[in-house]
Image (cartoon, rainbow, N blue to C red):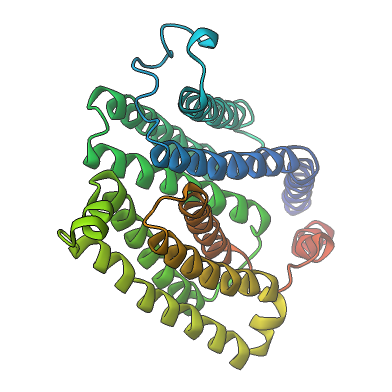
Length: 324
């Protein structure tokens, strides 16, 4: 009986090991590749959405989901129509990509971790909400609250997608640095609030009114003031990483990118105001920087702050269990 019990344990352990290796060699690379494509598509979606807003092209297609009653409105095509049409096309592709990942997680449910189908279902829900807000943006004629909600949900999609990708990369982290994550979460939250204020600023025309008539400047002034706590929190993160040298060594590329994006974001903001918001390239660059800033902060929060363990090392406990 004891011999049979040990044999059964060995068989179960061997099957678990084979399934784990199959997941890492077959399914994991597919989800990683799809996740990377999804991140790029979401950043492009946010930037194109910003360009659509800056160029006042949000109502260039008067109907939804088609544009002038067709999928490709050749007869009405101009720069504004193209921007709105391409924004919807990118949103459609993002939706299809996330739906595809969710379908794969259901089909491969027995071979992948239990948390994957659940998180992909959350991602799919956010896409549906995002699409609904996109429709309401047109129906409500660019209502400020709807536009703001549309952008914030896009950021939530980006954050959720990156967190999934990093969890796929770092499944073997046993003791994450919670204090490091909390330190990084502060500028992420501040940046989301800053983006919320920024989209309110543009969708209510408060910036133009303030710069032209010196009225209704509260939103603009609040947007500018938020740059100070964000800057301070990033500098605190850099100082902490320098003090804990291992953090700086393992994350210097991301931290360098944060510093670069922070100061370039400030420069773009100043240039946008100096040109009275008449140069779309500065405003679109400002939106792109915010998206990359959020993406890097999210990556730092969820990635392993230290060198990843090798595959063989991670399988040692299972191999010992089988051999015993």
